[in-house]
Length: 87
Length: 387
Image (tube, rainbow over all chains, first blue to last red; front, side):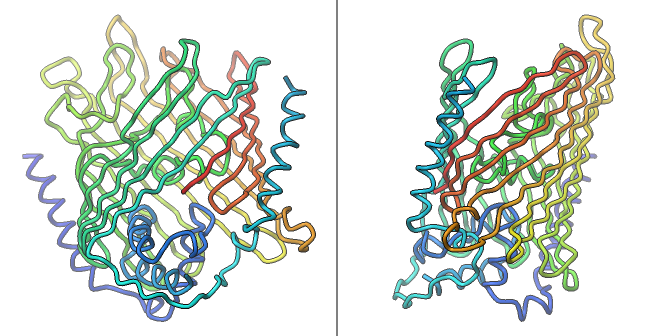
């Protein structure tokens, strides 16, 4: 019985979060990749220069940071685009 | 011994300073104005693979002896397939000197397959670092940890106890970030095999590929970032699981863990950078009677508060000053009074770092350990570099 409860809770969470995927904030519409880079990287470590990775590498590093730094896809994409444009 | 350290430190400092004068400086750490070069045509492939990671060499000085006691190499493998699949894994190769000689260890820190579901959610499975508090999950790499040593109970081994919380867990989970107004909430929830209770001494073992019961552990963390444009983050984590074997004397034994954490980093032009981190957590197992008539009130607690300060750039002539960072941290570990695996202990850490790149530093720290019965001091030097 408990197993069913756990699975139900998990499925409900997945559905709720999928619905939330459509959510974004007014701030995200205006904030730049440079600002997000400055705000998010330093939470854990010094902010890296764009030249440390190639454009292709930033794609993988950006997703890695999305997962370890708890970023949304939108935030990740803006930061990666900023770093690639600075390369 | 002290003389050796005193003679060695200026040498390391000199080498570091020469390195720092070359391509990297404080400006690289602080500036948001990255050099703009012409854009290259670089069509992205459908998949990309990257090896990153970090390296660490540690020098420990205790009881009048100094040894290069540990060296580690942690490659991180990243593989992205299209826009939906992402694999990440870290393997630790560790060589450590001990009373028993040289110990070599190879550990799979994590191996996680992620399904990127959209803007705000990622489904993951495999072996992952449990999001309990922030230290173990986010700051465990030596080049990210601001001090040369880790807090007791959160990575620094003491009396046979290394972690007072799950480190690696095997299972599935979901995580992501959601915007609420102008603030942000991140979440990470998982189901895993869970901890296993050692009925001989009341300790918990994590990182279990084989569970000792059909019950699964549930855990997770919610992080609140209430102030737009600020790095302030407040976190709440929890973890619960049945930890005893089924149909045994400990089938109802359950662990409950609660953790709070805070993180705030602020760089101020002309003043420098302040980095504040802290974590408080309690852990309890609702079983007091163990084998061989051992009775333990099995409740433990660990907390730490850490502040790091990186100097500002005063002028170009002494720009190396801004590569210096000082760190202080206080950690308190409370374990059950009659537990055979430890005693209440405090750890005061005072350290200084010299950053030669944004991801590489020489770090030195002195740890003052104090228990009711004893007091010890240890010095640690670390060279660490991310790549």
